Image 1 (tube, protein in one colour):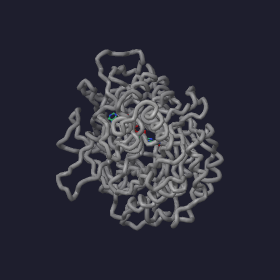
Image 2 (tube, rainbow, N blue to C red):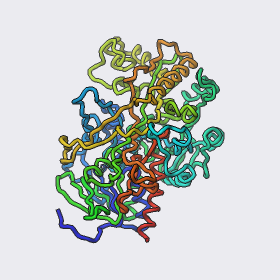
Image 3 (cartoon, rainbow, N blue to C red):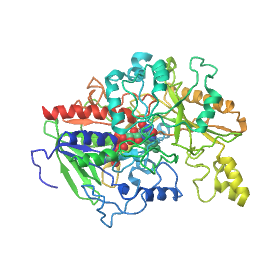
Image 4 (tube, rainbow, N blue to C red):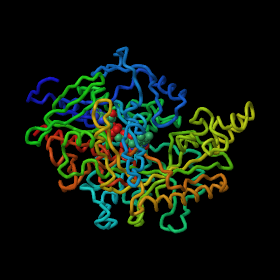
Amino acid sequence: MRPYIAEPEFDVVIVGSGIAGALVAHRLAMAKKKVLILEAGGVAPESLDRLTMAHNFFTSPSKSPDSPFCGEDILPVDPKFDPNARPPKYRFVQPDPVANGENYYFYDDSDPTKKSDRFKSFYERLVGGSTWHWQGIYIRMLPSDFKMKTHFQFGSDWQVVDWPISYDDIEPWYVKAEYEMGVAGSDHENEHYYKRLFHAYRSKRYPMPALVPSYLDKQVAAAIDGEALKDFPLHPLKVNTVPHAINSQNYDGRPPCDGHTSCVPLCPTKARYEAIVHIEKAIQAGAVLRSQSVVTQLELDDEKKHVKRVKYRHWNGEEDWTSGRIVVLAANGIENPRILLYSAAANSSDAVGRYLMDHPIKQSYALARKPLFPFRGPQTTSDIAAFRDGSFRKHFAGFKTSIKNDGWSSVSAKITAPRGASIPAPVPGNPNANGTLLDFVENRGLFGTNLRKTLHDHATCQITLNSACEQLPWPDNRVTLAKNNPDAFGIPRPQINYKVYDEKNYVTKCFEVIVALHGLVFDRLGIPKEDQFLQKEPNFYGGSGHIMGTTVMGNDPKKSVVNKDCQAHDHPNLFILGSSVFPTSSTANPTSTIAALALRAAETINRKLRA
Ligand SMILES: Cc1cc2nc3c(=O)[nH]c(=O)nc-3n(C[C@H](O)[C@H](O)[C@H](O)COP(=O)(O)OP(=O)(O)OC[C@H]3O[C@@H](n4cnc5c(N)ncnc54)[C@H](O)[C@@H]3O)c2cc1C
C-alpha cells in the first residue's frame, strides 16, 4: 500500500454506486467538486448490449429476482467506465455470489433457543447497485410515518421513535428527486385519496402521468372498491394506481414502458430508472469511478474524530487507499454497518447494526374462473393502500397490497408458474408443482394442442396478491461481524440476528388481517375456496429487498448514528446514506426517501465544502 499523505486526494469519496451514491456523486460533480466513487461490484456491460442481457435472462432456467442476466462474459474493469474497454479475462458473475444472502449472511444457530429467523432481503453488488433489479415502485412515506411515537403513543418498551425530520421538511426533496429520476403518478389520486386520507400533499405535479392500470387491476377494482373487511369499516378498500420511477412517456432520453412484466430482475428497454443513469451523468461531469474496489475500512485520525483514509481492496487482491475531505458511506443497510463495525467508527451510541428492518411480505395466490389476463405491464400497476395508516397501527403493522401482473411467477422461488423454477420436474402431488409447464407435461402427460390450451387457460387466470407490512425497530434485530467467517477479501461476513415476529405480535396480527383481506378479494372475484391459496402458515413470509435501520438517524447522539442531515454524530466529515438511516420503516418502498435524503445531503455537503 502507498504511504499516507496528509492532503486529501478528493473533495468527496463515495462508497457505493447505488442510487444513494449515484445521486450525490452527480450533484457534487456538477458543482465542480472532485468526486471519487468506490464500488465493490463490476460494471454490467449494459451500454454494450441490453438486449443480450434480456436474452440471457429469458433463456436462463433461473427465474428469481437475482437471476443472472449478464452472462459469463467479461467486464470492463476500466476505472473511467469506458464501455469499449473489454479486458479479456475478467469473468463476470452477476450477481456476485458473495452478495447473495443465502450463502453470504451468517447466522449463529448453535443455540436452537436463540435461532434467528432468515433475513430474506439481499442487494446487488454491481455498479448501479440494487436498482438493477428493483421494481421501480416509487411511493412516498406518509406524514404520520415520520412521527410514529407522537401519533400512536407507543410506550417506552416499544423502542419506537419519531424521525428528526418531518414530511414538510422532506417534501421539496421528494419533488426534486422525482424530477431527477422521472416518476409517473396520478395527481388526481394523490389529491383525492392520499391527501384527503393521509394528509400526504404534493407541492408539484408528477413529472409524468401514471402508468396505465392493467385489465386485471380493473377487474379487482370493480370487485372490491367500496368494500371493507368485517372489523374495519373505517378502512374502505380502493384500488389506486402505483407511482413508479418507470417512464409512461419519453423522459430524459429513455423510452416509455411497453409492458414486459420483467422489471425484476431486468427492464429490457431502460424505461425503468436505474442508478446507472446518474453514474453515467456523474462521470460525464468529471467524477471518477473505481469499480471492483471493495472498501474494507475507514481509518480514523489519532483523535478518532475524522475519517482520514478509506482503505479498499481490488478484485485482483491488491490493497490501496484514498482520502477525501468528506467521505460518504452509501453501501446499503448491510454493508454500511459492516464497514463501520470493522472500522470501529461512528459507534459511540452502540446503535450501529441495530434496528434492522424489512417489509415482511405475505403472498396469496388464486386461480380465477374467468381470464384476468396477467403478464402485461410492469409487475404491479395498482395497489390497495387502505391499511397504510390508521389508529390500528398502535396495535399492529400498517401494510399495503400490490396486485401483481405477473401471474404466479413470483409466488415463491419454488413455484414461479407457469415457467417453473425447478429442473427436474416437480414431484406429482406437490403443491409446488401447481400450474407449471413441467407439471402439465411431466405429471399430467399433456402435449400438443391439449398442452397449449391447458397452459393458456391456466396462465390467463392466475392472480397473486402481495402485501408488505411495516416492521418496528427492535435493537436485537441487528447486523454484527461474523468474526470467524471472513468473505473472499478477508473481512468478516455480516452476522444477522433477526426476528420477523416480535414479542408484541405487531407483525403477526398484521399478517392475520392481510390473509383476511386476500381472502375477501378472491371471494369478491368469485374464486371458489379450493382455488384460493392463502398463505396462513406463520413460517411463510418473504423479504421485500428493503434493508432498513442499522445506522439510524436521530437528534440524540447517545441513541442514533447520524443527525438529521445524515452526518455521523461522531465524525463531522462522514455522511451515511441509504435506508440504513431510517429510524422506522413505514409502509412505503424505501427508494423515494433514500433519493430525497441523498439530494438533501448533497446540498449540505456542498455547503460544507464551500465553507
Ligand atoms: C427485488 C427487489 C425489488 C425492489 N423493488 C423496489 C421498488 O419497487 N421500490 C423501492 O423503493 N425499492 C425497491 N427495492 C429496494 C431498492 O432496490 C433499494 O432500496 C435501493 O436500490 C437501495 O439503494 P442504495 O443505493 O441505498 O443501496 P444499493 O443499491 O445496495 O447500493 C449500494 C452499493 O454499494 C456497494 N457496496 C457494498 N459494499 C461495498 C464496499 N465494501 N465497498 C464498495 N462498495 C460497496 C454495493 O455493491 C452496491 O452497489 C427492491 C429491492 C429488491 C431486491
